[in-house]
Length: 333
Image 1: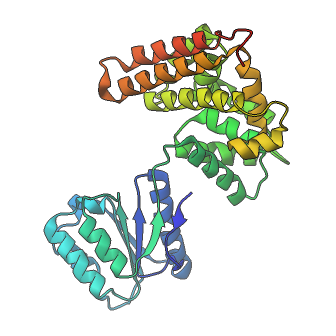
Image 2 (image 1 turned 60 degrees about the horizontal axis):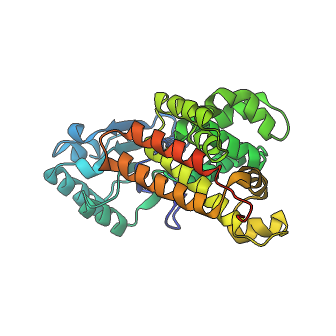
Image 3 (image 1 turned 180 degrees about the horizontal axis):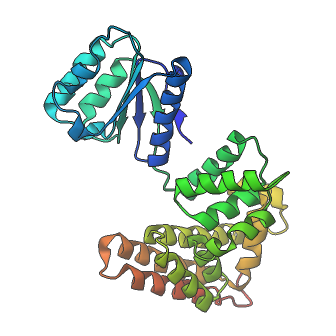
């Protein structure tokens, strides 16, 4: 979920700076400002501009005083890509903002266009963080926030299942959460999510990882093909594999007989996941964990440019992990 980075939380502040590369969050930041402006004045004029549309002099024209003092919202997307002359115009405007006009700058962050970013912050911009959510934990937190915003209760298992099923697209996650809230009464649980999105779950990176660490190579490879066919990024699959193998290693090294609640606290896993990993780790040995982690690391390097065929690298890793899941000997844990 987009987060505020300063104490100013008025969408009608003269300047809003939305920083990041997550399109859904950037769009929401814009919609929030526009909604607040139109609540104050239904006739608010909204101008949504790309860098090529904001030429030198255009901003001055858009923000020139009006005889009717109309409220206006000027949105500038990809502000890091503005020309040097246009950036000068924007900086000059920041020194003397016009009343009844709200300027919204969308900036990817990073080094490109950093001078404009710094100038906007120095001018006291209301800042909204819109980071790209590349980690599964971030997407899980996003889903929980969506249900809270919609005023509904969803179990931790339901949130995790939804993330597993939908994947990394925040728009689809938000849409799925809204659909569940519209269709289901009471608390949303894992069973409900499974009924709605079981087909998607079969194509998720976590499904690939779960089948692999359970030693079910054929099913893992089938899930892998579905995942790649539906656009799941290879790096997300290697991440899921690494996470699954590390979870087995962590739980295997934990004290025997410890309660799930204590293990959850000590290992940083939710209790429901402790139970799942306990089921998955039955065929594993210490050597198997080490072998699997090496295989996943090699695949990760392969999908990040170190190899010619990311799909083949993933297939090798899946087979290696599934084989490692069957290495337990009587003396192993």
